[in-house]
Image 1 (cartoon, rainbow, N blue to C red):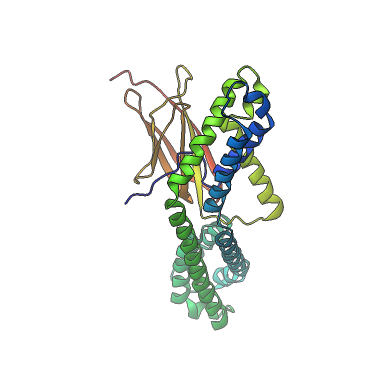
Image 2: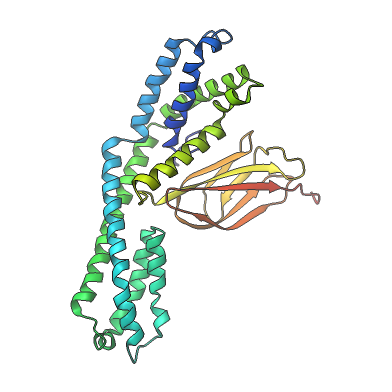
Length: 327
């Protein structure tokens, strides 16, 4: 059975946060809103708050999140320790004579790059490549100071990174499975939150400051800005192996939002269709580089090449489609 998806055009963990912001504003303005929307009583918002608490527990189970963070911190620590030890190996390779390949072919820079980008899969792949060459040239490297203990150190680190990466993936999978079992609950909650937001925007139409408090895009941006600041201030490591892609799709000629545009990661089945606001969103995308396609009947296909997805980050795109005059 294919995975169900949440209706919200944001990350799963952002759903209750954005909901909380919208509900806080609605509760603040409730006395005025209820004069135009009689069912928006304090009791109504109390019921919605209870649903929000349920969604929070589904989206971010405390114990699972703590375990994943601990494993990820240990994983990144081990990767950084490998990076620190590469300098000695680099010197040994540069000084060794009679190697089967030149020094650059050991590609230590690939290991460093993958460690810096927190790409554990890439680290393992590049380490396997490099240390296969080390094995082939071990006698020559020993003459320049490489030891059996040094070689064993890297082998042990590679195995540890493999184990921790698998543990991290398992916890992520468990979280996704838990969430999948409760997609309907999350979507029902989100539908009610969006009803509040859209209704309140109508109530305060013409009041830019108030309207912003109920505008999804504005709230999503606030959440992401706050999240980035908090991550920088409190934890330089990011307990994520995936990122997301947000696209705003418009008609290049008119500037109007385009609904019904398919955003697809090429060579995969990962896609989304833009809504009435021209928003398309992909969550849980593995860290890496992709080509994205935007297509809609009557418009020329638009491609974004070399689109980077970084750990725990959101890649934002503006896709301007041009009408296809040949059709």
